[in-house]
Length: 184
Image (cartoon, rainbow, N blue to C red; front, top):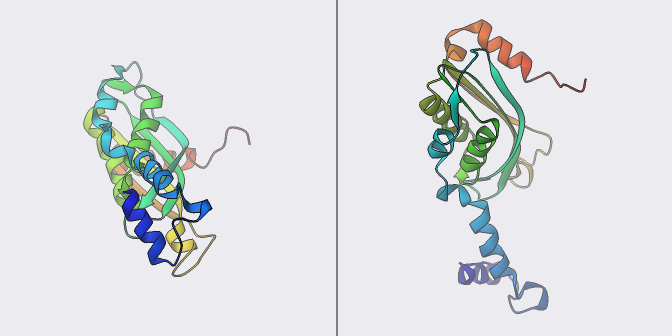
């Protein structure tokens, strides 16, 4: 990977031997290993390792989970917030595992639409939930830095499974809850 980065530097007209760039190939290689760590994580296993018997059957919402990912089309970052909810069947999962599932899928080359679906279906598959809802709000540097160059645009994607898809009241409750801020 370091040789490839040196080649990129040369191709854009830089001198990879100049002082400020000497260690750049090594730093970039290390950064890409960290940025794409999701390929080495198993989100299904994360969920299955933290299951507990459900005592209630009301909606559980985890709001404003920060995430960073890389657009697979331009290899530029996109970042934002994930909002995830589920209504348990017989099991619940540790709350931190939901954030870990978001991170595992975000640390791969992605498109926001697929990432949204992957998170929802992973949770549905492993929790046997009555339903799962996921909404991602993100800014994409590929839209901000190049092409259309719109700095203040957000992409919003959603995936609704089970009762969130089938019951308008449940969907509406989720969408209302993710707008509410506890400090307001």
